[in-house]
Length: 328
Image (cartoon, rainbow, N blue to C red; front, side):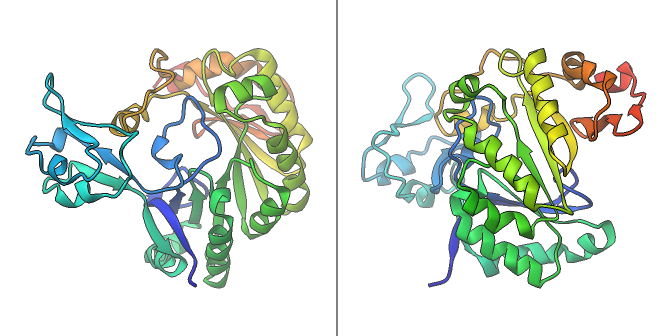
């Protein structure tokens, strides 16, 4: 039987997920439930319905076809309301909606189908030094498919990278990492209790897998990412410990801090879910620099970046980025 995976989407011509122009394949399914997750539609490993109220005309066609009576019209707003405890994700409402207000996150695809999409951009890969990046969700929720897809990229001489959560067995890590020219790993927080509080899982196996992956990935590089969230992982101790972890890794090329943002809020509402950090405000690069700028006063063996902007160069020091640029 041909391998299939639930793919959230495939984005073309990305410039922020590796070297050159990238085609990014987003897998569905993730074992973590990060409170700040910007892609909640990637968390479930299954296809799922979402509702775009701005397209809805209130015709009620979806209500009429629902076999579980999970849909009703709100008396206050006129919007379609879904009872998720009754919804069986049969997608009959999607078929009935002529205005595409009811849609599906996720598509079942084969390796050949995904490769067909990737290879549309081979010319851009050639001229830019780019390739494919596997993202998510977490590809380790569909390891067999991810490995087969990476083998197909090897056969096609397409450069491959990945964004990894590392919450899996090291056996799975060993199946994926050798195919990658580089990979990103998220370090949410170094504190195990905070990690469990904010993601739902302990970080012991994540940190262990990062260290073990470092031993087998040479000559390719590791890029550590920290989604910096106020009150969660922005304290001096955690930032310093994360940098010390990077210093321990022989193949860590970059430590990147990503300012917290609220871009996933709309997706939470489409899925009928509550967003835990509703009261948090987005951070700028300058906000992040004020938290971690002290790192630039120490000698490190890796570059330090804030959302793609280099603020420290290994072996050189501060890059001279100004406050105005960081605030822009």
